[in-house]
Image 1 (spheres, rainbow, N blue to C red):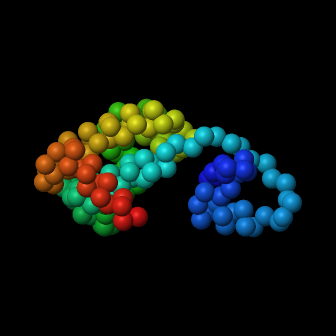
Image 2: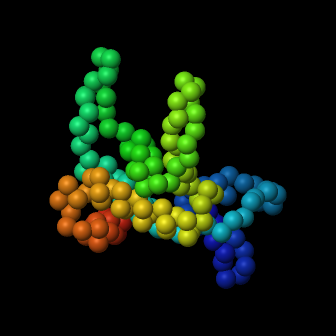
Image 3: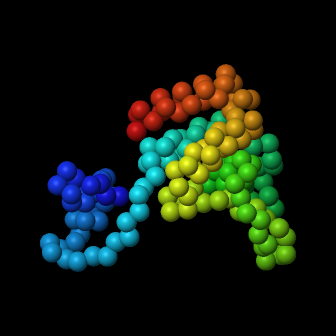
Length: 153
């Protein structure tokens, strides 16, 4: 991630970008693709929502499958909530079965308006499926908790 400075130059916007730029030799040419970034803070807020819901979620499925332990998985949970929110595409797997694949939430996959729509739908899905039963008073209460958690980042 880069940010435009008052002088018009592009400068590293975070530690990861500083490390990458730091590895370049002075005067070295590089090719870059420039796209306006979505709001990083809003992206983090969405993942804070997923984390809050994941931590509150207790699966009711068996703890073993064919003798192997089964554990909660954040990535699977995030994908399932995105699908339940209505943002998926149907695909065939190798067995000829139809599976639902969630839309990518990556910065390159959707613009800010689409991401806002997805966030609202995911909030509804995690509210209906997890957080209401976990004792949160309202969706507004959930957003308040998420905003408080983000202050500690």
